[in-house]
Length: 348
Image 1 (cartoon, rainbow, N blue to C red):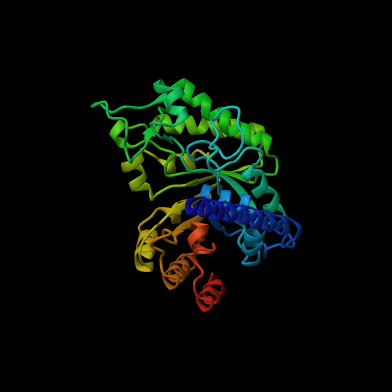
Image 2 (cartoon, one colour):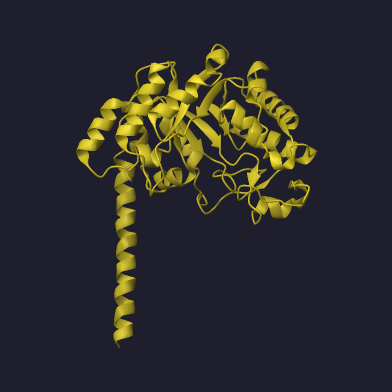
């Protein structure tokens, strides 16, 4: 008798939650944020939105509110994660990550629509790049695409890696990127990052990655010549040593339009030192440059005062910036004290 009563109460609570959620969704949809246009600037002022954050905003109909906030703060770019263990949109060429992209939804399309309303440039950010998981559908379907070391080791940095010299892998990425370029005419850019490379344990694949990148970019530009090609790597020395990613060659070849170099450092002094020791001053005439600043993880958020200091260092060097991620820099998980929020928003 007691067990039945408890089960009945649990069902009532679940039903109540579902009804409340649907009411929330309904009122969110009929009270959309107003349009806004940020102050026009050629300087990069961006934020990365992870696939989890983008899914959350899409399913709760809060994308318009989040983008309205970014626009009012005069951000001008949002790098939306669309490729992490599958795409978050329907693709003819890649498996879809239905865990974070429910059927009949399209988080990328939503982001583009709301980005246009708020005067923001929206980039499709392919976070996983050359990576996959051993149990991923892509790896199961194409085991011959997977790299192995001389010792037959496949997993490096907790991931498996696709072979850039495999013609089928090359065609897969050409198809994937060209599909997005052609299917989303209002998209502003495509971004790859430090995972658009191959760990050096597999050998030096820098030449293969350069050839593949050139082939893909040519195909993208044929489909949509207005798209911005963005790269967010580590500093050059580390990129070459860790991932055989020689992005200086790509800049000189005119393959990329925008460089957002990740300087995820604990302190502003370390950020300043990394900028001073970089080659950014030598390539700033060739590409638009921004510095990537890390806001911390959900469980270990960087102090707001330290983020402000790092942004000031970047501005003093004359560069734009992007903050990773939205969730811990501007998202709901950050705001615990109203005063902290107000001071932070005034400074960025």
